Length: 142
Image (cartoon, rainbow, N blue to C red; front, side):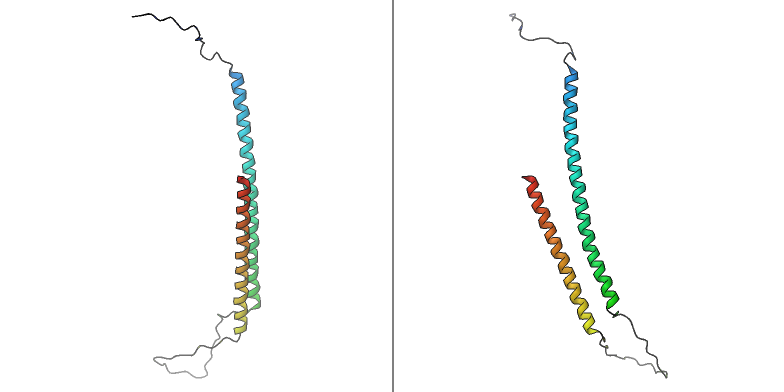
């Protein structure tokens, strides 16, 4: 067996002999940096959530207001009129009663038109909101 000379360039050091205070300071700086980034992202999320909530409340308010307005203005088509009979009628096995047309057919048509317009408006607002959100996401990525 040949004996090789010991490499004198290798320095032996004691465990934990390095300066841990500078490493600790570096780690604290990195932690503060990450904390700042997380707080910034959290603030952005809160801002976006409040924006989405406001949009949802506006659209919901419009739909509810339209519904309540139509209920107040237009008559209820489901109300049934009571028919009072002067004399008793003998039971009939099968009796077909023609449906009476509502006196307010124009009101029902107007109600249908208003609902169509309200839903179309809400759909358009939602499409615009989604498009704006998509554009802001693309701007944030760049």
